[in-house]
Amino acid sequence: MDAFFFITSIAAIISTVLLSVLLVYLIIFMRDLKSISKIAKIETEQISADIKDLRQSVKKEGFKIKNVLNFFRAIIKKYKKGK
Image (cartoon, rainbow, N blue to C red; front, side, top):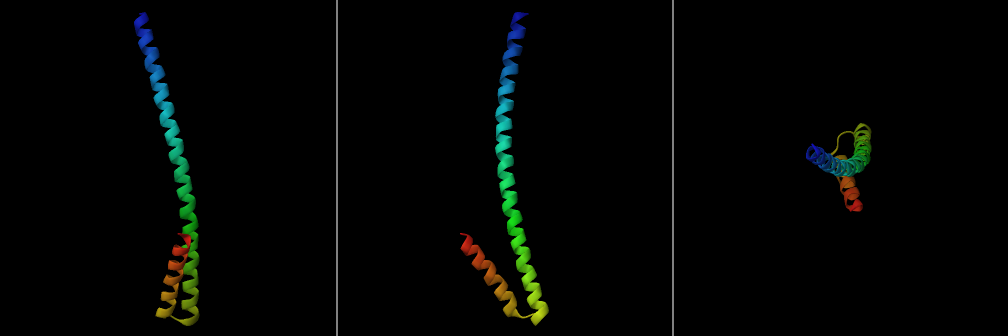
């Protein structure tokens, strides 16, 4: 009987250690996911503002290729500036 309890205790300890390691990696992953989510939210808000500016210029001046090109130039400038 003593061998059974010894083996069961060792298995419980190993399981607890593995579960703890898994939990640590899960916490690290969730923190990274939260960081990525914040960045995506900021970028989405910026794109939304750019599209709003494009819509306003199209409403004001009508659809012109110049407005679309200026829109993409602004996006490219922001992208290069961020790097």
